[in-house]
Amino acid sequence: VALAVDRVTPAVHSLVLRRLTPARKVRMLESLGAAGVTALVRGVVQLDPEAVTTLCVEMAHHLPALLPTIADALEAEVLISVLQTPPLIEQANVVACLTAQQALTFLSEVSVDQREALVVCLELNHPA
Image (cartoon, rainbow, N blue to C red; front, top):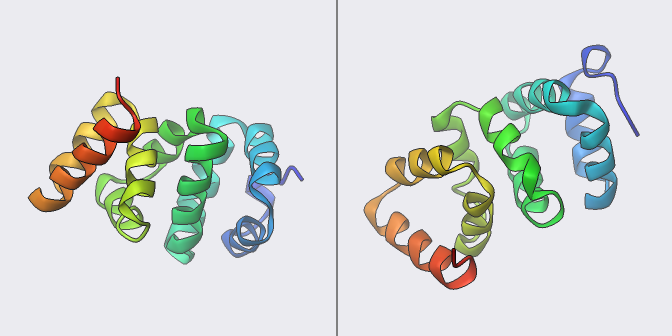
């Protein structure tokens, strides 16, 4: 299910992200490469931030190595906005997949209460 990012509109990508199973999303995203994933995420997030939220949560479980690429495609405030809606444990799963700098940026921008809760979740579920 490889889609040429430059030939498909963000609306189509949004629909594809909503309809594909996580395993099929993994195959699609792997076929796109980093530049394709970046273009896809930047196009979809403005139209359908919920689809990007779901993508982040699913990739934390199915293809964690892709999360830094997705995070790089988003501006810090957009990433924070996208990650505000999932449950705290899912937020922690995503943050655990980010680079150290991305995680620090994210944690520095959320509320103190949320930061403390995320740190506890990270310590319990992702000790390192």
